Amino acid sequence: MTGGVVFALSTLLLVQAVSPCPKECSCDSHAKVVDCRGRGLYDIPHKLHPDTQELYLQDNRIRGLGSMAFRETPQLRVLDLANNTITMLSPSALLGLRSLRSLSLANNSIREVDRRFLGSIRNLTQLDLSYNSIGGLPGALADSFHHLTHLSLHNNRLTKLDRSHLEALGNMEVVHLRGNPWKCDCQMIGLKLWLETFTFKGGVVDEVVCAQPHAMRERDLRQVPYELFHACMTTSYSYLFANIHHLDSQHRLLRGHLHPSPEAPPYGGEFGPPPECEAKQKPRPVNLRHAIATVVITGVVCGIVCLMMLAAAVYGCAYAAIMAKYQRELKMREKETGGGTDRENADREEEKEPLENAIA
Figure 1 (tube, rainbow, N blue to C red):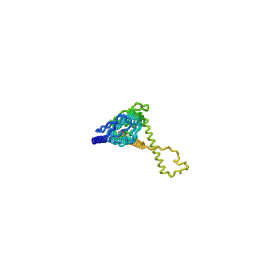
Figure 2 (cartoon, helix red, strand yellow):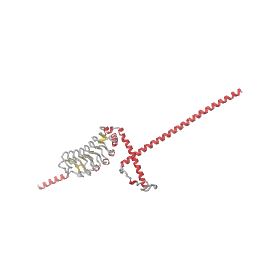
Figure 3 (cartoon, helix red, strand yellow):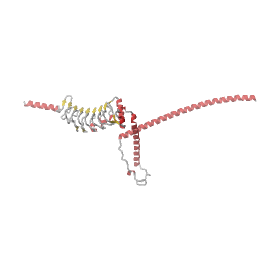
């Protein structure tokens, strides 16, 4: 009798050790799914099976994700945390989830997403950040999510979105951007170009409705004509030439320090104190992206100018050749006409001579 009880207890403990499941959740060990929806949870449940692949935690009261919050479930492929009260996301909360494919943080109170939080899940294909208070996206979005196909950012507080964040997402198929207070100024031209290219290639996007300025309010960014961005184009060219002038000044100043002129007066001489003693503006930090853009735009402008000069040269040569040919033909015609006139004059002189002899 005692042996039977011990065997039963041992079997029960063995089953629990093999297939642990939190008491607040329901588990399907065959499908490797753990369902903890609507259980009033304030934190991630413990004692999850390490082979769990799908974890559903929506409709709870979870307020934050701590460091290594899912270290017990490294094989997770689907994680749904929608409709909670999450405000805090630890940068290392998702660390170790290399197999994660789908992540939903919709309908929470998230204001900011750390680049390290997204950088640890590089194989993600679906990301839902809708219905939060996010005002901007980190650059890691473009660096990490090369496999992302579905991105939901609707109903947040986004006013702009860098084109480079989206261009690197080469596998993107569906993007949701509606319900944000978009500011359709010069910084949105890049997004407008990307949206037009994306939809032309077959991508699906809902709408980007401008909230400001007033002239573009309630208009879809894709339907705003480029003529309304004319001031932006002028500003871009002014910025380009200002950068060129600034780089040229810096180059001359550096060359002057490295190779001073032998005729320059000594410091403190006739021309006053050295330049280092003069009041200078605080140097602006060098922006590598702006520098590259400046070089590219400068190359494009120079290339266009060279093509125009080449076309002008070809046109000039062709025009000169046509005019030379025309002058040659004109001279030949004049010679032929002049020869006929000389013969007629000679015939007239010969007729006059016999008549004069007869009279004499």
